[in-house]
Amino acid sequence: MKVGLLIDDSLDRPDGVQQHVLTLGAWLTEQGHEVHYLTSTTARTDLPRLHSLGRNLRLRFNGNRLGTPLPARRAEVRALHAAVGFDVLHVNMPYSPFLAGRVIAAAPASTAVVGTFHILPWSALTRIGTRLLGLLQRRQLRRFGRVIAVSEPARAFAASALGVDPVVIGNPVDVGRFAAARPAPEDVAARSGPVRVVFLGRLVERKGAGELLRALAHARTLPAHDPASLADTRLDVVVAGTGPLEQTLRTYVTEHGLADEVSFPGYVAEEDKAALLASADVVALPSTGGESFGISVVEALAACPGIVLAGDNPGYRTVMAGLEDQLVDATDTPTFARVLGRAVTDRDLRLAAAERQLPQALSFDVGTVGRQVVDVYAAAQAAQAPPTLTA
Image 1 (cartoon, rainbow, N blue to C red):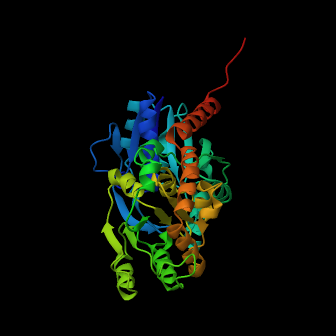
Image 2 (spheres, helix red, strand yellow; image 1 turned 60 degrees about the vertical axis):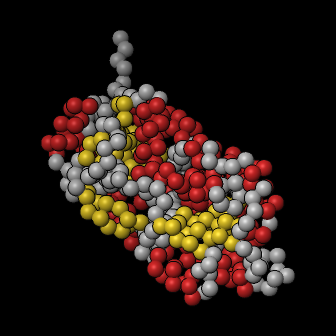
Image 3 (cartoon, rainbow, N blue to C red; image 1 turned 30 degrees about the vertical axis):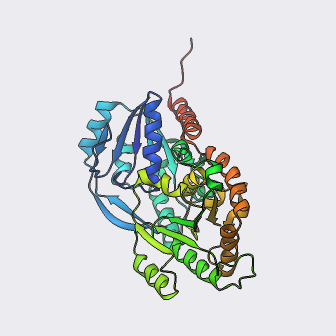
């Protein structure tokens, strides 16, 4: 098939939707499909068949940074359709009427249109904005042969906000790449030195780095006889990532006497993420909300040879099915501190968790998810095809 993966934003950053597009695109290409990437301004040069169709403006939406595109040139969009002849146009949703909307409008009847809906609102503004967008696009949404949602909570929101009926298929993750970095159990058992706790994500409010540091400080205050106490435990806490809260977090660490055990390495390149997660005894991803899925959680489940603690929000709960005892309400500092303390001090607990985590991660491997997506493409194409005339 000739597949157009359409995203209103740039592909220059490894955010969640970008990871979805790049991981799925690479797998489709490996399966022999001809994949085209349709984006707003993208500077990278390593992707074949990349079409930058418009400039974008930077803004914040649903607690994330993203780009919103300026209008794509209609003549350029029509010429692209004529030159390629897409079998499937796969649109990442919600989408802008200025770029994706124009590409959809220009698609010939022979092109099947499929969508993947990604978001779960973190704020009332996001919820209202998405519903208004759905009202404006209601007629064009009828052009979609099939819609995918990345989780059940995202499906429910897409159905109410846009009036569509999605099928649930999780985000594709290259689980093999992360699992390959995981050390052998005997090597983990032989580790000595401080217990390593890793946070990896944007340093913004909803991702929970602040909650992790507050839980750490609280666990340090528990009496030494308490099983969850970290009063006498050697720790190496890595808060990896960048964002507007970095200086606030650094100040908190200094003021609470944590500077000797907490480090801020900054931005972690995509190719270095697996090694960092594999070095952890505990990975803590205590997001407080606004998550429709949890690509970062799947990556941690695959790579971490210890235990993964994740925020108890609807998107992460989807990914952590069967591992609910590892979910935490990060806003409840005393309870989070006890969960964190037990994870740090109990090696057997960590090793038992690691055995359960990899099979869960594999259910979201790109090979499994990719085949499900291709089935959706086939269904959309079948629905798009004109009826066969019989004598």
